[in-house]
Length: 121
Image (cartoon, rainbow, N blue to C red; front, side):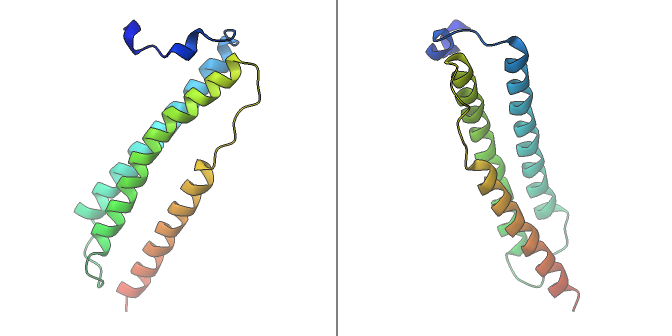
């Protein structure tokens, strides 16, 4: 298992375990969010009736699944950057991924609202 251990875990000082555990809980929350996005993609493609606009379900599913996939990768990057910062006693790094995730999901929500409103006519 040591071969999967990043070298930066040996740098700096071990942070208070409570901070490391809080960072890990945040990582797990990101993973749960990614899993929910992927599940939503499957649900939209498989369970939601077709919209009047051809390809809308598949497009929404692809956007949600891609967002889930990217969120999974960003979860690890964010966790490792925060852990590294705590070990080096520097400020936690700023991440734009929260803003990007908010924008993407807001656009998906808007698209769903418009598709539902359009489909009801």
